[in-house]
Image: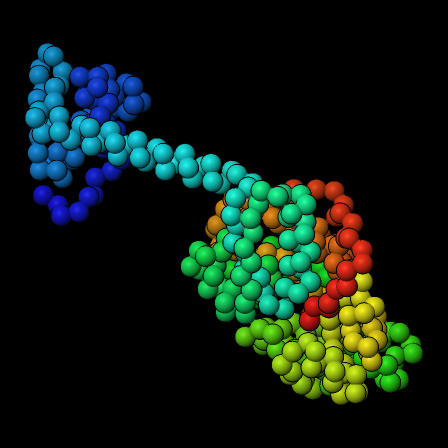
Length: 339
């Protein structure tokens, strides 16, 4: 007899149905299986349990042995528990209310978290969202362990995660008011590359962000400028204010007060839009629950209400994103997101 339970639910179902019908042939018809398949499954179950479950009668079908009678109720209970588990799983997947754990990349959290949580309260008050803010490594681990169903991130190449692009967020440059380009209001990446690029190190593995920046300058046929890493957005903006360089940031729709009192925004002039994708990351192959899909729709609205975007990806349409995004409440200042 095996020391662990290797028998299957199908074997238990064949056993219980045969006992209830008193006949393996009739049980097979009810189970839409062949008589030989049912007989073999019961024989394997008997072998695994090291007992005989049925008396076989040539003309009167089958009847339970004393061991079979003892195990019959246990088998029915296991099948009922399995069905309850299936029903609960289907219900959990289909519900749009309840608890949802979401990881958020630290660099995108300041703007998007307040905006999307505000929409959740207004549109889906039954959805309780718990935010787990962290670095790239934190986000990846939260998804891997199943702590969070999805993560809100910018596009992260090479992270072994499935990423769905929701919206392409336009980036602008931030320079000091004393910079010669400030009065012009726009600049090319080639012009900006003569200055130092200031980057706030908000995420472990910031090299991914550097790769994205390098790709932008490469697309503009321009060398990557010298990079100065800072510990926070506040430090970065302060250094820009004293003409220590510039930064590339995702510009919010209410951006006039988000780049610091001594700095100004510059539109970036390029053949292709200077932009960065924002969306959701999941473990490959995972099917999102209805709660998560509802959250993604609200996140899409939040992105479009907070940032200037250039459109929606084909991938995002799989979520059946509804209509135009709702109007963002006025009178609440935003912060810019580092590119």
